[in-house]
Amino acid sequence: MTTRTCFVTLAVAAITATTAVAEGELNLYSSRHYDTDERLYSDFTDATGITINRIEGNADELIERMRAEGANSPADILLTVDTSRLERAKEAGVLQSIDSDVLEARIPTALQDEDNQWFGFSQRARIIFYDKTDVTNPPTTYVDLADPAYEGMVCHRSSSNVYSQTLLSAVIQNHGEGAATEWAQGLVNNFARAPQGGDTDQLRGLVSGECDISISNTYYFARAIRKDVDGLPAEARDNIGWIFPAQNAEGAHMNLSGGGVAANAPNKDNAVLFLEYLASDQAQEYFSAGNDEYPAVPGVGLSPSVAALGLFRPDAVDLTEVAKNVPAAQKIFNEVGWE
Image (cartoon, rainbow, N blue to C red; front, side):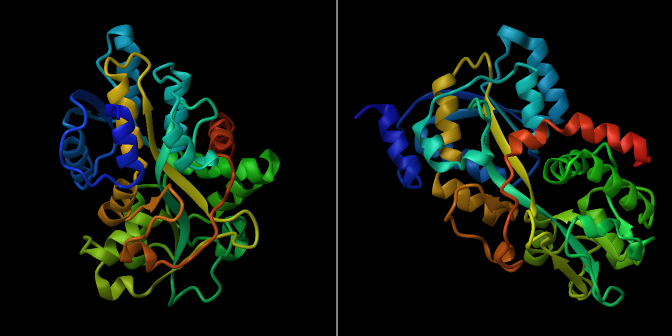
């Protein structure tokens, strides 16, 4: 049995061996900033003998660094968050297409690039949260967020944030550019405050009373279920309700965390092994247990904090197509004055 065949077998069966089946190193450029990812890296090294060298930073800065380094780039892998950034890396020419039967079999088609330059490994649903005391008739779809009935009630992130960009891009994909423009204008009209802060700040706005409705990725709230989060005490969190939007329409919008092999990867074989490991049951379960995300691979179990949010139907739209709408989304942001 070859080294590659041995590892592929382990990856699909959720790596259990601790003896080295490969050797060498892997140079990882990552904009994922989660301490819990350390377990992913150490388990991969334990299983393969491959040493991981990491450079961490802002996604756009890492993409530009890889572009500037060109053929001399030491990068083997780019890991980042959100489809728009993965597509940005592809357009910058810093990724390459790869062939992997493991990834093709394990990662759903809608969660991978059409040219196999990037693959999604974990997901977060972007959903509606609300103050159960003040909101008795919460919006049940993304379109509802623009209803004048919610004027002055909604908190959201800025238009420069990739989560905002990808959500509007999905609205464009599902409803058309004209309807998306009307939706964005209606949402701006309903803002309780100027767009600001991160996703946890949108949830804190519900606790402070600045907002009655907010939009956030699920893993921020699931994290608060699992452990203490500053500004989200248990007694206040219990007053926060949530809605998985559009369950009778397109389904809940999903954000993606994923990666691809660098265009000039000096350790390409090790890079492919690493991506295959991220698709293993072991790694997929840890995305949920360690960072409260949804696995990309169907059938992998959820951590209790994630499972507590309940069942829902995700939007099955092709995320490659959604990413192509980002320029149109930015134009709409500018037109409607979404800061």
